[in-house]
Length: 167
Image 1 (cartoon, rainbow, N blue to C red):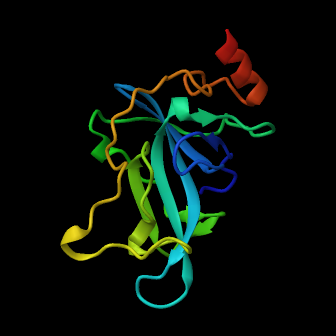
Image 2 (cartoon, one colour):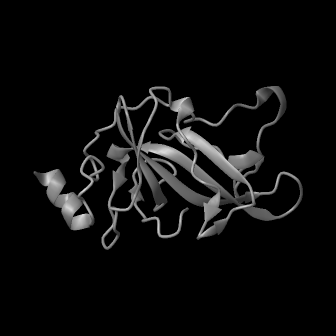
Protein backbone atom coordinates (compact mmCIF):
# COMPACT_ATOMS: atom_id res chain seq x y z
CA UNK A 1 0.00 0.00 0.00
CA UNK A 2 1.53 3.31 -0.97
CA UNK A 3 1.71 5.69 1.96
CA UNK A 4 -1.65 7.35 2.45
CA UNK A 5 -3.69 5.02 0.21
CA UNK A 6 -7.34 5.47 1.20
CA UNK A 7 -9.53 2.69 2.54
CA UNK A 8 -12.68 1.54 0.75
CA UNK A 9 -15.46 -0.91 1.63
CA UNK A 10 -15.25 -3.98 -0.61
CA UNK A 11 -18.57 -5.73 -1.25
CA UNK A 12 -17.15 -8.95 -2.79
CA UNK A 13 -14.63 -11.49 -1.41
CA UNK A 14 -12.46 -10.90 0.50
CA UNK A 15 -14.87 -8.16 1.72
CA UNK A 16 -13.68 -5.84 4.46
CA UNK A 17 -11.86 -2.54 4.10
CA UNK A 18 -8.80 -2.89 1.88
CA UNK A 19 -6.68 -0.03 0.61
CA UNK A 20 -7.39 1.48 -2.80
CA UNK A 21 -4.09 1.61 -4.72
CA UNK A 22 -5.37 2.66 -8.17
CA UNK A 23 -8.40 3.01 -10.41
CA UNK A 24 -8.16 1.34 -13.79
CA UNK A 25 -10.21 1.93 -16.93
CA UNK A 26 -10.56 -1.16 -19.15
CA UNK A 27 -12.73 -1.57 -22.25
CA UNK A 28 -15.38 -3.23 -20.04
CA UNK A 29 -15.45 -0.45 -17.40
CA UNK A 30 -13.78 0.81 -14.24
CA UNK A 31 -11.81 -1.42 -11.85
CA UNK A 32 -10.20 -0.81 -8.45
CA UNK A 33 -6.78 -2.20 -7.52
CA UNK A 34 -7.09 -3.09 -3.83
CA UNK A 35 -4.59 -4.40 -1.27
CA UNK A 36 -4.96 -6.08 2.11
CA UNK A 37 -2.96 -8.20 4.53
CA UNK A 38 -3.92 -11.81 5.17
CA UNK A 39 -2.44 -14.10 7.82
CA UNK A 40 -1.81 -17.71 6.81
CA UNK A 41 0.29 -20.64 7.93
CA UNK A 42 3.80 -20.66 6.59
CA UNK A 43 4.25 -23.25 3.81
CA UNK A 44 7.92 -23.64 4.78
CA UNK A 45 7.48 -24.30 8.51
CA UNK A 46 5.36 -23.86 11.62
CA UNK A 47 3.65 -20.64 12.59
CA UNK A 48 1.67 -17.88 10.95
CA UNK A 49 2.88 -15.17 8.64
CA UNK A 50 1.53 -12.11 6.82
CA UNK A 51 0.91 -12.09 3.08
CA UNK A 52 0.31 -8.82 1.20
CA UNK A 53 -2.60 -9.63 -1.10
CA UNK A 54 -4.02 -7.66 -4.01
CA UNK A 55 -6.56 -7.90 -6.78
CA UNK A 56 -8.70 -5.93 -9.21
CA UNK A 57 -12.32 -5.46 -8.07
CA UNK A 58 -15.07 -4.13 -10.32
CA UNK A 59 -15.88 -0.53 -9.38
CA UNK A 60 -19.47 -1.63 -8.70
CA UNK A 61 -18.14 -3.63 -5.72
CA UNK A 62 -16.37 -0.63 -4.15
CA UNK A 63 -17.97 1.85 -1.76
CA UNK A 64 -16.34 5.01 -0.37
CA UNK A 65 -15.63 5.44 3.34
CA UNK A 66 -16.53 8.55 5.31
CA UNK A 67 -13.52 10.81 5.82
CA UNK A 68 -11.31 9.24 3.15
CA UNK A 69 -9.88 11.27 0.28
CA UNK A 70 -9.69 9.72 -3.18
CA UNK A 71 -8.39 12.57 -5.38
CA UNK A 72 -4.75 11.39 -5.26
CA UNK A 73 -5.56 7.78 -6.24
CA UNK A 74 -3.82 7.13 -9.58
CA UNK A 75 -5.94 6.37 -12.64
CA UNK A 76 -4.56 3.88 -15.14
CA UNK A 77 -5.54 2.83 -18.63
CA UNK A 78 -5.89 -0.98 -18.62
CA UNK A 79 -5.37 -3.44 -21.43
CA UNK A 80 -8.33 -5.45 -22.75
CA UNK A 81 -6.56 -8.59 -21.45
CA UNK A 82 -6.80 -8.67 -17.62
CA UNK A 83 -3.66 -10.82 -17.45
CA UNK A 84 -1.76 -7.69 -18.54
CA UNK A 85 -3.10 -5.52 -15.69
CA UNK A 86 -0.41 -4.40 -13.23
CA UNK A 87 0.13 -5.55 -9.69
CA UNK A 88 0.68 -2.94 -6.98
CA UNK A 89 4.18 -1.77 -6.03
CA UNK A 90 6.00 -3.96 -3.47
CA UNK A 91 5.58 -1.56 -0.56
CA UNK A 92 3.45 -1.30 2.53
CA UNK A 93 3.12 1.61 4.90
CA UNK A 94 5.75 3.70 3.14
CA UNK A 95 8.49 1.05 3.10
CA UNK A 96 9.53 -1.93 1.02
CA UNK A 97 7.55 -5.15 1.50
CA UNK A 98 10.02 -8.05 1.51
CA UNK A 99 7.69 -10.82 2.71
CA UNK A 100 5.29 -12.92 0.63
CA UNK A 101 2.86 -11.35 -1.82
CA UNK A 102 -0.11 -12.83 -3.66
CA UNK A 103 -1.98 -11.20 -6.55
CA UNK A 104 -5.40 -12.70 -7.34
CA UNK A 105 -6.03 -10.85 -10.61
CA UNK A 106 -9.76 -10.15 -11.05
CA UNK A 107 -11.78 -10.57 -7.86
CA UNK A 108 -15.30 -11.96 -7.75
CA UNK A 109 -15.56 -15.47 -6.24
CA UNK A 110 -14.50 -16.80 -2.85
CA UNK A 111 -10.71 -16.70 -2.51
CA UNK A 112 -8.43 -19.60 -1.65
CA UNK A 113 -5.78 -18.79 0.96
CA UNK A 114 -2.77 -17.08 -0.62
CA UNK A 115 0.78 -18.27 -1.17
CA UNK A 116 0.25 -21.99 -0.57
CA UNK A 117 -0.65 -21.56 3.09
CA UNK A 118 -3.96 -21.79 4.87
CA UNK A 119 -5.79 -19.67 7.39
CA UNK A 120 -6.12 -20.73 11.03
CA UNK A 121 -9.29 -22.79 11.43
CA UNK A 122 -9.39 -23.84 7.76
CA UNK A 123 -8.63 -27.42 6.76
CA UNK A 124 -5.10 -27.95 5.38
CA UNK A 125 -4.75 -27.28 1.64
CA UNK A 126 -5.21 -30.08 -0.87
CA UNK A 127 -2.00 -30.98 -2.68
CA UNK A 128 -1.03 -33.18 -5.60
CA UNK A 129 -3.37 -34.00 -8.48
CA UNK A 130 -6.44 -32.87 -6.49
CA UNK A 131 -5.08 -29.33 -6.04
CA UNK A 132 -6.82 -26.53 -7.91
CA UNK A 133 -5.93 -22.95 -8.67
CA UNK A 134 -7.42 -20.09 -6.68
CA UNK A 135 -10.91 -19.19 -7.88
CA UNK A 136 -11.45 -15.65 -9.05
CA UNK A 137 -8.23 -15.33 -11.04
CA UNK A 138 -10.07 -14.39 -14.21
CA UNK A 139 -13.71 -14.28 -13.17
CA UNK A 140 -15.92 -12.42 -15.68
CA UNK A 141 -18.03 -9.69 -14.15
CA UNK A 142 -20.29 -6.92 -15.32
CA UNK A 143 -18.99 -3.75 -13.58
CA UNK A 144 -20.90 -0.52 -13.24
CA UNK A 145 -18.20 2.03 -14.11
CA UNK A 146 -19.70 5.03 -12.30
CA UNK A 147 -19.88 3.39 -8.86
CA UNK A 148 -17.76 5.12 -6.18
CA UNK A 149 -16.77 7.95 -8.49
CA UNK A 150 -13.73 6.75 -10.47
CA UNK A 151 -15.08 8.31 -13.65
CA UNK A 152 -14.86 11.81 -12.21
CA UNK A 153 -11.33 12.84 -11.12
CA UNK A 154 -12.82 15.84 -9.28
CA UNK A 155 -14.41 13.57 -6.67
CA UNK A 156 -12.32 14.14 -3.55
CA UNK A 157 -14.33 12.75 -0.69
CA UNK A 158 -17.32 10.67 0.21
CA UNK A 159 -19.76 13.55 -0.07
CA UNK A 160 -18.59 14.41 -3.59
CA UNK A 161 -18.69 10.76 -4.64
CA UNK A 162 -22.16 10.36 -3.14
CA UNK A 163 -23.43 13.53 -4.86
CA UNK A 164 -21.97 12.28 -8.18
CA UNK A 165 -23.71 8.92 -7.87
CA UNK A 166 -27.11 10.37 -7.04
CA UNK A 167 -27.03 12.76 -10.04
